[in-house]
Image (tube, rainbow, N blue to C red; front, top):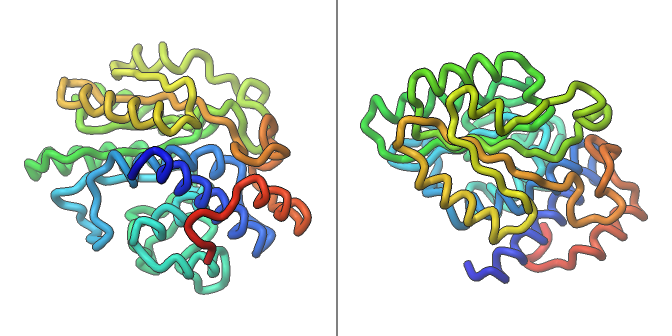
Length: 280
């Protein structure tokens, strides 16, 4: 895609997020909007993946979403990348839908390899998948995404220590570093300290993307991260995003972490993100 096509794709993803959550008056738009550029860059430009989905994922890069509540952005990008029909986004969070509020595997939704409703587990799974690729002599990479507030879960740090100790150097773990979670800022709930120094102290290679909603910078950062793999250390990207990015009244606050817009608010939000690829 050209840069403009990538930006248009991202705009459409934001519309998808807003419309999914509004329709059922339920879901998590804030973090989803903040990660729209990341998912677009990953699936449209960086990752080697196959929409003809196979659960084993041999001979392709794998992605694991740990902070599963931002499923609206994940579903949108999977659908618009060819994994399942875009029209299926209409079923988000409905009874018997494959598109549950938090991704699940029991309904066999293409692109979903783990259930990620409980926070803190994705790092362990991604590390296991990366080790499996090493055992299978598969040179492809494993990518994962984690919330910053999610790092308050202790299991993460056991896994982070393990990955460095076992030299799991085919893993690129990205932290959505927006500084907010459902109850307020991460500093108010439980301060994270200096994440860069912490990951480095655990033996990881750490990169920072200061403009985490600039798709050019994200692509550059992800491609740089790829050059750091295979050198004995797992790689962490601290992606500094804006929760609610692209909708002015949802930005700069944690209030839209898990809150759906009203009819009037949806209209305003969509007007700020004009249709580009066609709604569902």
